[in-house]
View 1 (cartoon, rainbow, N blue to C red):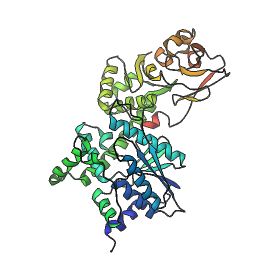
View 2: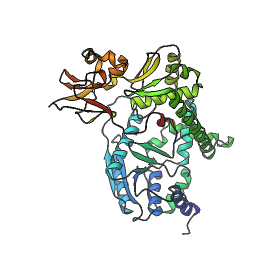
View 3: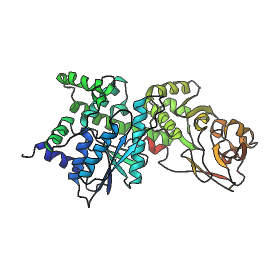
View 4: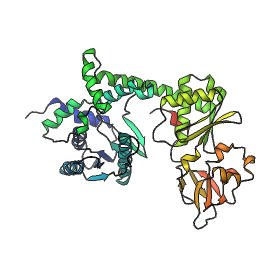
Amino acid sequence: MPLSASDTDIPAKVRAWFGRVPPPTLAIALSGGGDSVALLHILTRCFDPGQVRLVAATVDHGLRDGSAREADQAGRQAESLGVPHSVLRWRGWDGSGNLQDAARAARYDLLCDWARGAGAAALALGHTLDDQAETLLMRLARTAGPAGLAGIPPRRLRGGVMILRPLLEIARADLRAYLRHNGLSWAEDPSNTDDRFARVRARAALAALAPLGVTPDALAGVARNMAGAEQTLGWAAFEAARASARVVAGCVVLDPHALRLMPEEIARRLLTGAVSWVGRGDYPPRRRPVAALLRDLHRGQGGTLGGCRIVHARGEIWVCREVNALKDIRAAPDEVWDRRWRLTGPMTAGAEVRALGAKGLSRCPGWTETGLPRAALEPSPAVWLGNDLRAAPLAGMGLGWRAEPAEDGPGFAATLLSH
């Protein structure tokens, strides 16, 4: 059978997507569905084994019958192509919250942890042009701004692993043709036809909108245009942060007068970035609660959002960690606490690092001399032995202990740049 255009063009397009220097080890998220099976096969044709080492993994969420069998089948496909395969099992849902959101977050966490363990700094996912279009349509319904309408990013750093989406410019129909031509089988997730899910309804809506020219290609073009606008706005927010924000004791401190004079979109981005950086959330807070908080701040009020407490103090706006978000976070001395602090000092058996809290702060007689507001000190790291406070370096009770930032990412202002 002669090769189809898609059979020859798609691997060439994907190979070009990686540029001249592909990652030496590339991890692949293999769900067993058509898009990921196509991705696996395409990548084995893009790279020689001596050039790029491929490894694959399947996440079995265990949420429906047959998931373990499908994961095993995906493994057999990978191994038939000479790609080592692992099954990652998630059994972490406690029945509360949004199941889809929890499963998605767990999937990314498991895959990034596995990729790091496999020596891979990059993880390839099988999102397609159709996924991009469906995502854009769903975000339109949520009145998303430029960041949301920029769609699914082709590259994004998460947990120290660069997530790559090399199929984002390729239509699902072309991938299905590729699969059929190469005699490849795949599993169909039953949820793909369940109209209880927004993505399935968006897929149906796209078919209805096609006569108007609202096609996956057109929506992907919108996403590319908005990504350019997003980069420009990110740069403006970065410059605003450099001029009107500073980091003090792990908090972001903002000039309220400068914040009020900024264009609303830049002020919103600055506040969103501050909450994300201080709160260390995997996802930024949504647009509406940030806009509401910004209005409250302009009226001299504060609030809580994204694991942060935001207050007016000493004529400035302080974005601080929220104490309640830290109640279960503990670490041994010299370990990283809350992904941001490392405490070192005279070791005491059984001591641990926890948040200072209001009661701990009351035991620090010199805290007012630090010049830091209570909202910044209560969530600061302290050394405890049971209920006995041994040290609180940021609150003026050092006693030989030091609290130093554990740098595990870019500084605050740099996080506002869009990539």
